[in-house]
Image (cartoon, rainbow, N blue to C red):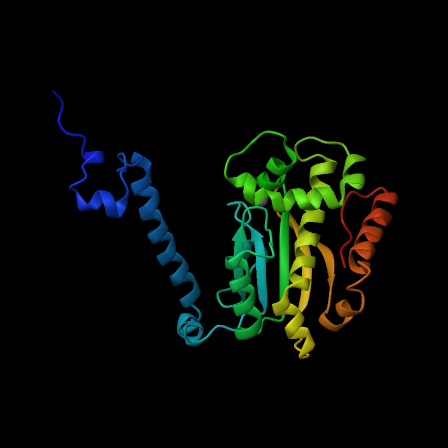
Length: 263
Ligand code: CO
């Protein structure tokens, strides 16, 4: 007869508090990797305070970030590293496929705090080529729970179905890369329509919104365009901003360039 299954023992209060499953032994490499985090942290602190001993003391007093950065959770898209931002310069929100759903309490809370309390000057939505979330959204295969979230990318696909169908499919092919760009632009548009942003513009608060795409194969960040607060209000009805972005991209392609316009 075997011992009672401790995983299911109803008398253990921890079972109710922590859930019925217990963690298996950790991967042996984790301990050294975990310790490395702290060593690197101390190195980083030393490098910043060597020439500026008050670096952290100044930032601890308050934060005044210029940007709210909305990017993908992908570990290869580190917001501060790829933009060279220092602590205090960027308020960051990341999720799978850098989405800005109208009913996501997390995103909306971040947006509200960034715009109303921190008074950021700009919101940037950063997509990235090779995005696993975008790739999964384009695939007919089921992916489980995350398919709920990826519906936000499929909405963008449906909006631009005609254009996307003209492009070659496949991993990191033209269709996927174009959807990455369109998705970033569409999420920026959603930010623009958010009541928090509309209210800020209505009271005259300067706040620009931008979309960009990061290429993790070469580290280069590409500007997809954007507009500045009061200008954007003029074309809010006619999708003028995206037409302008698309027109510029097509002109670039006509000249034989696959790169997006830089400006
Ligand atoms: Co991604």
